[in-house]
Length: 110
Figure (spheres, rainbow, N blue to C red):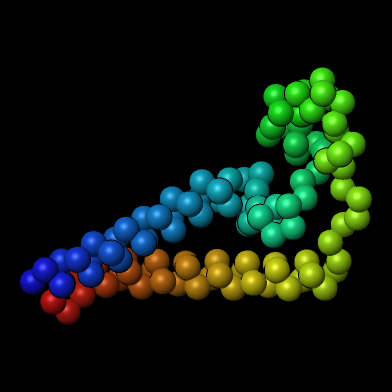
């Protein structure tokens, strides 16, 4: 009985963490379908000002904004590969979330 209960709890926790993380991080309209900053660490200046204005002001006050300027962008092949990985992970996660919901609604065979 403990094994069944704990496996169900683990599935619920995994589904909850995935869904909350996905929708809070990537599901926002301004970031949809995915926030690609996680892959290359580069953010547009306008986006930085909008999301992290206080941090940018501190950088300006300290005179270090140029230190964080992008010297060169990531390559097309790199972007294609990491975006492919990101979308693959996204679709796998959504598929697993759907399967978890179906398993819980259907009783899961217990």
